[in-house]
Length: 239
Image (cartoon, rainbow, N blue to C red):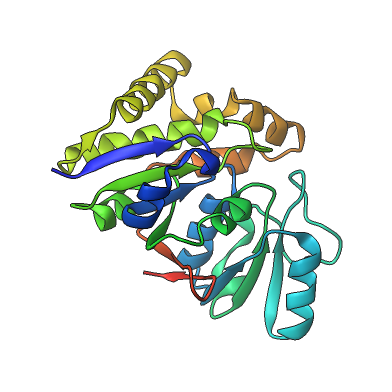
């Protein structure tokens, strides 16, 4: 029986799991939600980059690509798109190659250079990603926020654990705890949306006027897309 585990930060993922498990990277507010939205809208590839200066350097060399992302929730100067999934519509990104740098999500991906299979997961594509991972040992890796454990990522991970259990996976004790805590938080707040709004990261986005992004990110199984990160090429494509 395959197992499912959760790493609350990329640093917490055991080397043996990084090298052998199917990895699902989660940064639900908002990088992995935005990546899923971009591919749903027809983006061709996404190149995740860890820092802003490197992203600008690559964009100067790749003249037909879009520079996208955020720092502290807002797009840096000169970026065509920020990190809101609502910006990534088909009329803007269809057929385009995107260069994306974010505070937490692209950092997490940069730490997985020994990985075999890396999927990009969020609440909006939970079902598609979990179905893709069905039958394999899986570790869900939460990106965190400023290298701290982030409740919003844990909620997304908990929903994925529930789905993978339905598909026959055996949760580790820590994964089951995350799933139980997620279900308790959703019950306590009345909805996934309200649970995400109550997190530190959610409150920060509300302050920035981005509550619509949180509402979008809370929609379970909205998108039937599986972004796959190819470690050797450092590019994400639709699986």
